[in-house]
Image 1 (cartoon, rainbow, N blue to C red):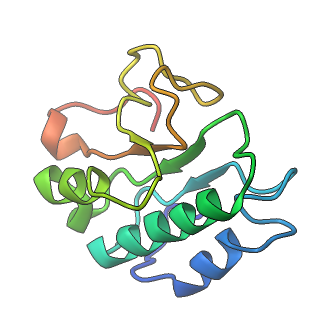
Image 2: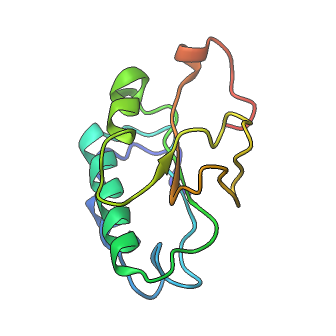
Length: 133
């Protein structure tokens, strides 16, 4: 968990995600990355999604549970910009934005069989405090 900090463009996170021993594609590796309440830039989210795409492409078996990427309360990712990036095309990577909406997706399962749950949003957008933040 890397929240709340003032992270903007944490390039080393991409290297960590792609590590074959402890990264996102490793059998017992990283399953969640919490970057909420930071200053994460749009370009950083794109780099993370491309890294996850490379991991999915090289992995003969993606872990059964989706990777959980929390990016709430990052000004550059609020609103349409964050959604536009998360809905982009990143090779064969399947991304779900329903992870925090109580629509059948959970931390351990995705009803859309996505590789990654990306959680975006802010209190400013919703006008209320998130229950799980």
